[in-house]
Image 1 (tube, rainbow, N blue to C red):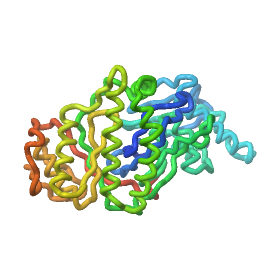
Image 2: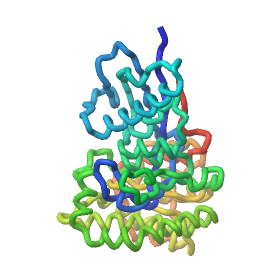
Image 3: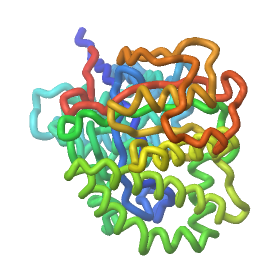
Image 4: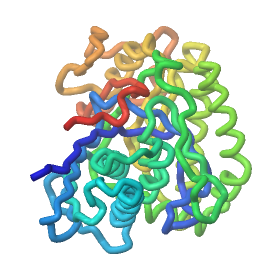
Length: 374
């Protein structure tokens, strides 16, 4: 008896130009385009196994060992149905192809971020679909909007499109990691608690109540998307960093402009902003960029040559109970150190483990996505 099963891992991406708001909540069509960096799978990834079997009674999903409900007409159900539709088209062209589109599927995923990219990639492998990453992003988008950007490595844009059916709202590669290989990321894990306001409910409340969001959609994001693409193509880090920080700041300003306001940052988050801002001022140029999604955790982008200095600076304000676990062997001084000319009064030192941990990683290469494990 044949076994129809595939295991795929997919990475996490962190937005530089933020997606916040839907113009169509069913198709998951965004109010603005967005751009992200896809991080290496060695440190953060979603691993998903899909299996099709005629003996299964229905489609089922397990996330981190816990079975999740697949609601009829819901996002996951839509993803699975769309993938079966593509498989049915393959079967229609090849009468000898196994009729996998008629089999229920069992899906098991282990991760701590949206599952849609790995789910779609896993089913694409299982069904042997001749589809491009951009074509698959149309379906991944309907599971989790931002997850569609994880179907590429390097620097990725999710173009908002304008068609009512969403067929032009796709993820596209702006540049692979190999174009700008020395960009690294430092993730500051401030909290792993569940958010008080989920992204789904928060963004729709913003769409309904924030005048600032409307200005952002119409005037700010289009110009920033063009500018950050050019900065990436020219490998202009100060320009890339400035736009990334400005957009993070405006995203959280939009959250505050929501009625009632949404608070994602906390005191530790704001201290990280102050420290990185002063670091750039003291250097006389922009050497690092912070960005925050819908939560208190920071991601800092910087050229590899600056990462050791940044880590030591952050350890001075956010000490750790254990030495910094660095896969790149930077020989970090775990006591922390201030750069020359840095004004130490910009923030107060926090207690040990106020930042729960640091993760040093870099971008995902184009040949690492998706990774087929079995």
